[in-house]
Length: 114
Length: 110
Image (cartoon, rainbow over all chains, first blue to last red; front, side, top):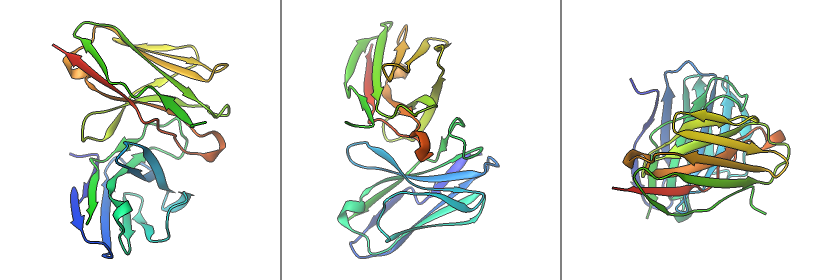
């Protein structure tokens, strides 16, 4: 069974569209994250939720909105997509919000905006 | 100054070689330190945590020097399967997040 899964794996869309990426973890973890990895391989956190509560909200455009319907799911909705949003988006989870816990990453969603 | 600095490489080494990666971090309040491994077009995976006293896991040895804000990873007897990007990851101190370096690419040649 996949520990952290993301759908879709690939997403190709045009500028201006709205899209969502879904993430699910079956590890029983309390904390989930969204990361963005750009073309220079720089992996940066966007959001973090602990027990469905937003605990980290980095400086990202308002067009990005995370939603955590329950502890096992963290979705990312992106409005009005721009060329610069093209990147790989990774979902991750950890046992708790304490940073000493290992973070388990999903396989990534490769978003291409044309 | 970048939060985490790593030599991007690539490090091209023959099988069986010993290779060392270095990393410096800027936040003196960092408490937790890790090395993650990322294969090409795959997700990062934890390789090992780094403890103050230094720690070893098989062929891998990690060292931390808090005074110099420096972390290292030594890989002995390199295998072809060690080919990957190695990410140095300190925590961001009071920011409550991990800071990922851009990684060092290792290519082990047969």
